[in-house]
Length: 503
Image 1 (cartoon, one colour):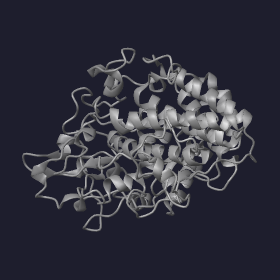
Image 2 (image 1 turned 180 degrees about the vertical axis):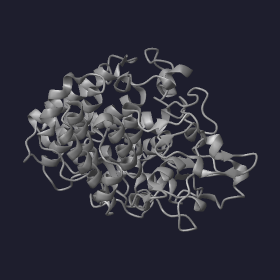
Image 3 (image 1 turned 135 degrees about the vertical axis):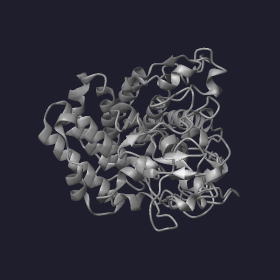
């Protein structure tokens, strides 16, 4: 990783809210502030930027590789392990765990305390939602994490609570915050909804609850009534995304762009390219999904070519002209950083009605989800896509799962990995693996062997995962497991143990 973004107190005191600049160019921990003049107007945007730099960069990268949206450029190696479905306890320690836990979860608690003291209930809700979002992402990575004993001064070795307990707890936190906040309440300075009241934060909170309850419904449909209430509640009217604040200045670009596409830190290596699984599914002989050109740039031949997971095949570096022979994500310095999209919300609604057996409504929301995805991508052709891939009531999980895998590929790759693990689509093609598509000894690349809308075993897959399997979770981070005897220590088996909502 080129840079870990951490917040500088000095930068905080000199920032204008019109830009994300300096909230990203930082090096002092804000979660234990000592300056007496710090307040919610300074700390809330810091939470957003720490969430953005971890969720919108590190987890996007891993999610992209683990869901076979991304492959590694031949001849480069930065994220080769991810393309082999590998995650080590060391790699999961920095940014993903440390930044989300220490800088977002704990930092949000500080904001909540300040807001509660002054009865700033709009700000209290905003901090609660950001904290809940980070905690949910941690559960989605690790399943069990410190929660009930986390942050308690007297407890130095907090126990890890199971994922369902954490989900229930953060839903309770959101409900309490919602009970205090009113739409007209003011909210401290923030990037997500600047110069607005709590109304959109209430909508965001409801959408987050909808996602959490939908995850739970996969293993416990007793929450169906909760989902029904949320479907009829006030939900976002636009994609929930951090945008309009990114600039081309060093330290203030979209975090994923800064990591992989900018040369600010002296690294010009191009690692991430589109995977043959995604290209082969979106680009077929009789149909080209218009979103493909919105999500990825064309290659040096003005076309599309997908890479293969599991190797950087240095022998192919002379066959292809590096990343330019393939397709790079269409990222710009000011690309929106999505937290929850309207397409996702419509897919959640479709799933609720499908589980209830109301396939007329399920189909309507399935089609609405695809239309919202096309709208967000800024392209036309949703009706043709729906005609090509209609909703199938007898296998609704497949319909929703495949459509969501595509829709999220250019928006939120971590969420795609989560839903892939939960809905189990696309499935693995056990007859074709990465070694069939790309043969190193003969330098043979045969993308036509790929079967659309399937996954394949990477050429070199982590031995902890094995053939025709997903990486189901991260091992508990070294930063925690080596210091806390109450934290589970990872084993090879844990990589293929589903988190609670995917069982």
